[in-house]
Length: 419
Ligand SMILES: Nc1ncnc2c1ncn2[C@@H]1O[C@H](COP(=O)(O)OP(=O)(O)O)[C@@H](O)[C@H]1O
Ligand SMILES: [Mg+2]
Image (cartoon, rainbow, N blue to C red):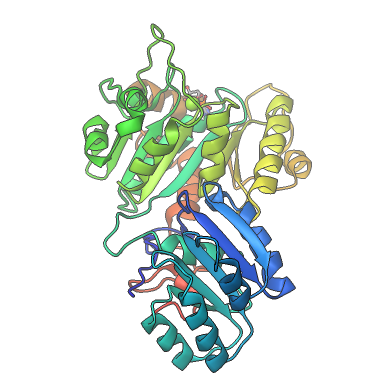
């Protein structure tokens, strides 16, 4: 059985991407409290939101007994504390009741290469050595559904403003330009501000209705259709733009975006989501499902409150993910009373990743001409701060080991991932 590493474009991304697990049934049999506790962390992870998971006590024999009458789920995760002979004998009993299409992942307590080889030879999907980390388990499960040669899994970076007009879209578009230019990463910008989106203007592109058509055909969207809906900005930068029309009020149903995001995710290694300042089921879902979230804020009380609320919500709801990054923008407007950066940081409990000054000339020229900040003011503080953000998000991160041809995650969890 061949295993593929999830494709993370490790050379380009700072954090490993573990794909979401599809709509499948998973049953886990845990024989130790430690593994059982880890599995509870697995279940609450955003990447597992589509799967149905059942956690039970016991080991291989408990599973064999349970399934002597019932049908086996899509994936069985079993913990065993047994040694080689016991494990092999118990698994052969399970095999008699296990549906051939069920994929089995075993968590063992012995680091035994001979056992591992024998298990894989017998068709076991994966053997992990305890103690396991929650992301390692999710990675093992999601890898089962990414066949060799499967489409890459793009990294999703979601931008949202703490209120309207704070500069979230401008910063998102500038980061996308850096990614596609300086870092040579194929990037798709998706403008989700249907009526008022500015991506078309900022990239100086003719209006296209990419996202509106995608939403209208969301039940049958695939990569071929998506390709047709994208507007090409440069060799590596594509835009799924908003219609920016007010004649029709386009609603987004709760689950409409899921197949669209899946299709986009299979089409490019980096997806920049430009999410409007809205708190709806779909905007929340997009933020929940993103690999990185950037909240752009301004130094005023309403922004501060909203940033704290969004930050706290996402940090609690995404326990296995990095906390959102905060960008403090439009700082230092003349004669305007502002919340000082130190006080702002203290109140939200985190330092802004970058602080961008108010710069009417650079931002105004960029917006009016449909240009990027680095073109208009290459030496400006704003361009410099956006570059810092881009480096953090897309550049190589020395803390994350980069592997040749393998995912960063494989390096972090070097167990018996590869034959
Ligand atoms: N630091 C800044 N200094 C001056 N103008 C800015 C700054 N950041 C953003 N702007 C301007 O503010 C306006 C709103 O920006 P936009 O990116 O559309 O905000 P959002 O997406 O948060 O609603 C734009 O005209 C933009 O050029
Ligand atoms: Mg916007």
